[in-house]
Image 1 (cartoon, rainbow, N blue to C red):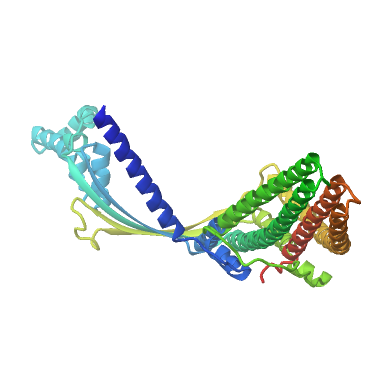
Image 2: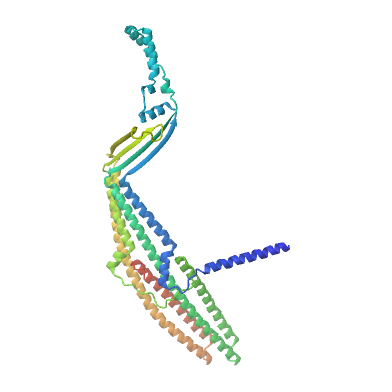
Length: 484
C-alpha cells in the first residue's frame, strides 16, 4: 500500500514537471505587442496553407518542364545478361554476336549422311545420285543434335536507343504552353490565397481591437454600477432606498459581468485564430483605435488587377490552346529513332567488332475514326465560347460586387456616426438619471433602463464597426490591394 502511494506521488511529480517544461518551452515562442505589419509578414512566412500552395506552384513548374522535355526525345540504355539452353535463343544469341556457323544448323549430321552415301557409291556418281534419290527423305528427316540440343550459352547485350518526335502537328508545343499557363494559374491561386489570409489577419486584428474597446467600456460600466451600488447603500441607510433597489442593481451588475466574461472569451478565441493564421503563439497585439482605411477604387484598374478576372482570362487562353491541340489530332505525326549496340557471350567483348545499328522513322496518321476528332474540335470551340462569356461575367460580377461593397461601407459610416451620437446621448441620459435617483426624482428601475440603453447602443456600434471593417477588407482583397 505504501509503495503504491509512493508510485502515485512520483507519477504526479513526473507529469507536473513535464507539464511545466512543456509550458516553459511553449511560452518561449510566444509573441507579444505584435503590430499588424509584423503579423502580415509572419503570416506570409509561416502560414501553413500558403506553404502548401507554394508546393503546388513548384509541382506545376516541374510539370511545365516535363512537357517541354518531350520535345527532346528519349535516350535509353539497356543492359541484358541472359543464360539459356533454348535452341531458338541459342541460335539467336549466336546470330546477334555474329558467331553463327553452318554447324549450328546441324550440317554435321547432314554432311555425315552425304559422306556415307558417297562411300557406298565407291566413286560412281550415277550410283551416288540414285542412292541420294532413294534415301533423300531419310536424310531430310534427320534431327540435327547441334541445332536441337545446343550447349548452354550466356548472352550479354548492350543497346542504346534514341527516339525523337520530328513533327506532331503542334501538339507538343501546345501542351508545353498549356502546362506553362497552368503553372501561372497556380501562382494566381497562391496570390488569391495570400489576399484571403491578409484579409483574415487584418480583420482579426481589428476584431481584437474592437473587443478590447468593448471590454474597456464594459469595465467603465461595471465601475459605474459599483458607484451606483454605493449610492443605493448610502440611501438605504438613510431610508431613501429599498432592498429591492439594491437587488436590482446587483442583478444588472451580474448581467454586465456576464457580458464582460463572454467578451473576454471571444477575445481569447480571436487570439487563437490569429495564432493559427500566423502559425505562432500570439499573446498580445498593438491595438488599432481607428477604422479601416477605405481603398481608392478605379474600375479599369480593378478589371486589370482582380485575380478572379485574371484567372478567367488565363482560362480563356488555355481553351484557345486546347482548340489547337484538337486540330493537331487531324494531322500526321512523324518520329525518328536510332539504335546502337553490341552482343556477345562475354560482357563488352569485341564491342565494336560485333556492334550493330538500326535507324528509321515512322509516320502515323489517323485517316478516319468515326469523326471523333472533329467532334472533339467542335466541343473545344464551344468550351472556348463559354469561357469568353465567363470572362465577361467575371468582369461585370466583380464590378457589381465592388459597387455594392462601396455602398455598404458608406452606409455603415453614416450608421456609425449616428450611433456614436446616440451613445454619447445615452451616456449623458444615464448620468442624468443617476443624479435624479440621488435626489429621489427617478426610481432605480429608470436608471437601470437608461444604462441598458447605453449598453445596447454600445454593442450595436461596435457590431457596425466590425461589419464595416470586414467589408473594407473584403473590398481591398477583391481589388487585389491587400498588402499594406
